[in-house]
Length: 548
Image (cartoon, rainbow, N blue to C red; front, side, top):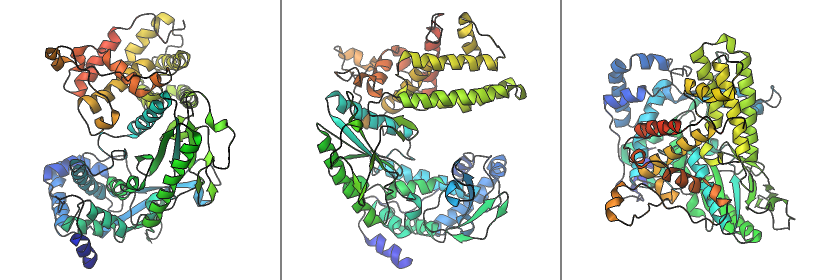
């Protein structure tokens, strides 16, 4: 081990200011303890997260000593390297087949605290040195699945507005986390500036990982993990995005939008043939990267879709070159694909995604309504919020600009849910506003407006690391004295109605309609509170969710 670390330390990093060690204080340890989820099961150390949270202040001192000794001596405790694996049935397939189960890894509470502390420091270093690919949205501050879908769809809309086809290859790795090798991670950590004791600590962290399978309280014997990247903690997610960070450097023509191991390989051109050719070239480059990094592509789960606003390219006649090839296998051309929880189609109509959302809302609300007699008011409202309205809210700024009749369908269901919570079996049209106000709920359009403007406030106004990729520019007022108070943005000059339904266009339109005093708030909480009050104040008896 010492020879390996010494060899890596002698190599020259990409960044001139390497990260050699991590120092944490007791306050940081206490804050990390408070991030634990008390409902998670007990891990290998036998200490429940609830116990840590109940005594976070007195426990922070001895735990700080343990963590400091671990970092100083570059040794990660062997007890914390053990994970408990719980098999969860996927809902399909024979129950006697292991492939029908999803392994859920659970680390000990102590391991999660250390993971959180090291993750925060290392991620801050990578953000400060600007080394993570700007197209990586996974497990990063100010990034999310929503930001990944926004960036991909903005690219599709912008290209389609000028008449270009956009092809996207949705790449799937075969058991991505299980095939990441320790020495390759160490090599890449060194390349990005992780050196000295911290590099040796990571080597210890990744060595001799074990697991036990836990079923109904019964533990199996101990197994050595096949791969070296443990799952169940934040740090393993960070190590994976560091591991895959150089993949975009291999590409020659395409853009790769990443969310951890989910890759959308994207290229726009005037013809189908050029799109297929470019994506095939860079698919070959990804295969080359996989060969060098001992990863595998799953050709059967990798899919291709062609986007265009005026016609459906997926239904056109296919020539011999109208397929992407991986390992002599033709990749399926699809007319719909679930990307990070959002259903895409070649024209970005969002019809299929709406159907999925509408169906989930109906099924879940009906189930809750049948059992509402067992719950108190506050519990029932919480259940609707977490299980039903969360489905509507997910990525709503992206797909929420669909036709009015579909929005009305969802609004009517929200009204019925509100009536159910209030135990009103009949809700008249004139009572719609009162029902929503009593529960402090919003209509679908109101939810979309608030979540969209919150996104702009967090990432553009507050200038997060995501702001540069959004390509949103301030207007220049004619009078320089007005510039300080002007928070409006330049509207993209899109020619087609199709492109004007994009998040980029609609978000700027919504933002520019907000009164200037609300735009100029300094905190997100104050901005959201005042925007919500403004939206509620402008309501009228004739509203989108009435039966008109």
